Amino acid sequence: MFSFRQIHYFIAVAETGSVSSAANAVHISQSTLTTAIKQLEDDVGVSLFVRHSKGMELTHSGHQFLRQAYQIMSAVENAKRSLTEATDEVTGTLNIGVTSLVSGYYLADLLSDFKKVYGNVDLRVFEDDRSYIEHLLVNGELDVGVLILSKIENHKALNTEVLTYSRYRAWLPPNHPLLLEESISMEQLLREPQILLRVDDLSDQIRSLWRGFSLPPEIAIQSGSVEAVRSLVYAGMGVALMPDMTYRPWSLEGDRVEARQIIDLSDTLDIGLAWRRGGHRNTLVEYFVSVAREQLPPASGSALSI
Image 1: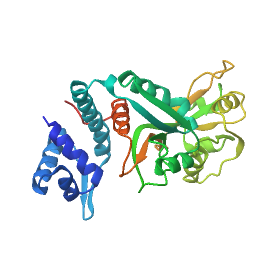
Image 2: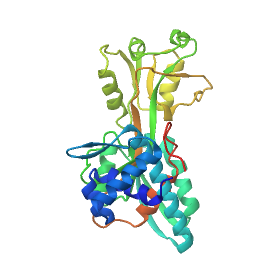
Image 3: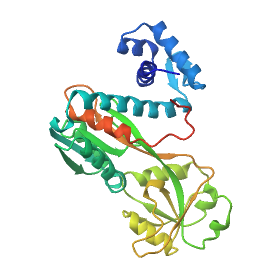
Image 4: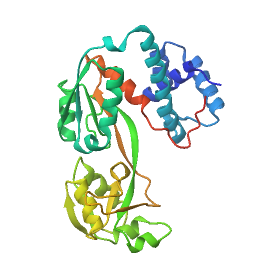
C-alpha cells in the first residue's frame, strides 16, 4: 500500500522530469526519492516512468496515474483547507478566459462545482479565441483559462493541465451504409463528403488528423456551429469527424444523428487549464485548479487503487 508522501514525490518527478530537480523541490535526497518511486511502482504493479539519460518520462500508465494522483492530492488539500479555513471567508475576483467550444460543453459544470465550495468568490468569464486568451493570460489580465490545450503556443510562460480527453467519433445520418459495418476506418470515412466544424482551432486539429491518412477528403460544407453540423449530417449533406464531448443524438429539430468509433484513430481533443507560470498571481487560481482536479473523470485502465 503506497502513501500520500509517495504520491507527492511521484508528482514532483512527473512535473520536473528529473530526479535531481524533484529531490530539490521536495527537499529530500535523490537516493530517497529514487527508492520511493521504485517502491511505488512495485506497489501499483506497473512502470510509471521510462528512465533515460536526460531524465524521467512518464509511461502511458504513468500519465493515467498522474491524473488520479492529482485528484487524490487535491481532495486531501481541500479537506485540510475545510478544517483550517471557512470557505465562505474566501473572497475576491477570479478572471477566467474560455474559448467558445469549451464554454458550451464543459465550463458550466466546472463553475458550478467551484461556486458550491467558494460561494463568495466573484467569477468573471471572458470568451474569445484561444490565441487572445493566451495573450491575456501571459499579460496577467486573466487569471486562468479553460480551453483546448492542443494548440497552446506559450508553453514557457504558462502552466497547463489536461482535465479531460475527448475521443473523436464519426457522425453519420440515419440509414447510412457505414452503420451496417461492424467497425469504421478513417479510410472509409474519408471517402465520404466531409462537414468541417470551424471553431476553437478545431478545423486545424481535424485537418491534421486527415493528413495522417493517404486519402484527401472532399470538404462539402464548413460551419462555425455545432448545431449546424448536426443538422447537416442528418440531412445527408456529408459526414463529420467530431470530438465526443460535442455529441448529442438529437438535433434542435428532433432529428437523430448516429455516432460511431473509428478503429484506427486514437487521437483526442485535450481540454484543460492554463495559468501564468511564476511571478505574482491571484491566490484564487490555486483553489480553482484544486476544485477542477477533483472533477477529473477516471482514467480507464489505471492501476491506481487505495
